[in-house]
Structures are given as structure tokens and as C-alpha cells.
Amino acid sequence: MRKLLALSAFIASIASAATAGEWVLGAGSSLFHDANSNSGSIVSFELHSEPFFTRNRFSLRYMGVVTGHATGDVFVGVGLSSVYDFDNRWYIEGSIAPGYFNESSPGNDLGSPFEIRLLLGLGYELNSGDSISFAAMHKSNASTASRNPGVNGVLLRYHHRF
Image 1 (tube, rainbow, N blue to C red):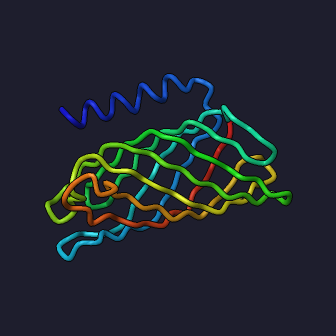
Image 2: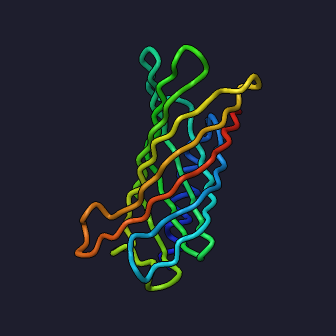
């Protein structure tokens, strides 16, 4: 039931962001911080809205994310994404997305179903207007639970603008 509610919330956030600006597909690796955990490869799909705030080179957007781990773990979250553009097609990006995490095994338990994903990346805009980025991400419950081992990851990402 929790999975269905989390998926429904994610779909609703996508539907409300009908003016989506880009989708982002990423692949990489994760490292859980528990001796009994199973780390491995990850894939990520994000949907970002058009910016709702822009000032000079800085912009802020709504976003939704689904991350699947090869071990079977799934994260679904919604939040905010920011981008700072440099003059020469390079940019830095950051995002925060609270959401629901479902572990596939007790070793990958992050302490609670509520987790917050943070991401920091460096990207480059291609001639087509799409871009590629390399990002580091971290998920944890921010010590809202008694146990908070967290998981880190790195992703190579492709951004496609609408």
C-alpha cells in the first residue's frame, strides 16, 4: 500500500508539472553505509519543470525522481532542483527531494521509509540544447529516525529538454 501511495504522489506531481522542462536519465553506482548492506548499480529518472524562479544565471524548478537499485531498492521523491549557468555552457546543479524509500533486504534498511535525497552535479550543454552531467547523491533520513546509515552514489546523467 505504501508503494502505491508513493507512486501515486509521484504521478500526481508529474501531472501537475504539465509544463515539464526536461527529463533526466542517469546510471551509476551506490554505496550503502552498513556492514550488512548490498551496494550496486543504480538507475534514475527525473522530471524537471520549467523554472519558476530565475535571477541572472540561477534558476529554481520543481522536480520528481524515481531511483531503482540493482538490489531491488526503490526511492520515489519530489522536491526542488536548482541550476547555476556559467558563460561557457557549463553549469552546476543541485537538488533536494524528500520521499519514500523501500529497501529490498534488511541490510539496505536506511532507518525509515522517509528519506531525503541530495544531489550535486556538474554539467555541460550540448549543441542540441540537451546536456550531460556527472553527479554525486546522498540519501538519508536526516536523523529523523534512531538509525541513519545513509547511501551515497554517483551518476552519469543525460538531460533532454522539451
